[in-house]
Amino acid sequence: MNNIIVISGPSGSGKSTLIRRLLHKHPEIVFSVSHTTRPRREREVEGRDYYFIGVEQFKQMIANDEFVEWAEVYGNYYGTGAREIETRRKQEQNKFLALDIDVQGARNIKTKYPDALFIFVVPPSLEELQNRLLKREKKEDESTRTRLEIARQELKEYGTYDYIVVNKDLDEAFYILNAIYTAYRNTTARREYFIKRLAMGGKE
Ligand code: 5GP
Image (cartoon, rainbow, N blue to C red; front, side, top):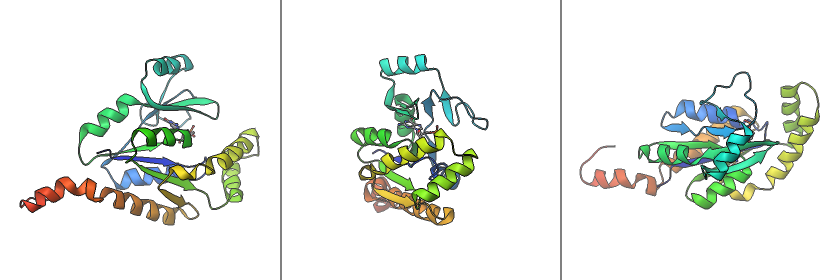
């Protein structure tokens, strides 16, 4: 049984905020910390947000087959460590692992873990996405244009996902995300262990 939740979404979709809220509400969900070659941002913490490593080390890890998936996103490398996913996944029956990865990563995870939950967070419109990106970056620069173009490409990959969360209003989007997770957590396959015990007089 794989308790894996994959959440993707274009830059500016509000995906990171939604994931933070989900983790805050559900302590049984563990965040999968990826490796990346991009520089650490001011508020990021090594080992909490990412493992920040150099390109050479990243390539060595690829060669050693240490990633369950990896991809190049916005000119940097990102990868999910195989060890991360395997050890955390097996820890406990009731733990869930959340992966914040791009569309390429989601596709690769789907091949390896088809029973994972795949959620795509999208903006209500490209105009709104542009506004959010501009607000974040203060001025229209190459990066905003690049991210918009990449978003347009990413949206075409919707077929990989089980659910689409349109983030127009953050509270509403979170309500939907939470409902999706709650349903996944209570599928018969994930409740089998409990229901067998229940029949013998056990408790949750
Ligand atoms: P950021 O640099 O803004 O933190 O992330 C950029 C993009 O890389 C986001 O879409 C994020 O989901 C994706 N990403 C982060 N970690 C991984 C990973 O391990 N694998 C893949 N494929 N994408 C990742």
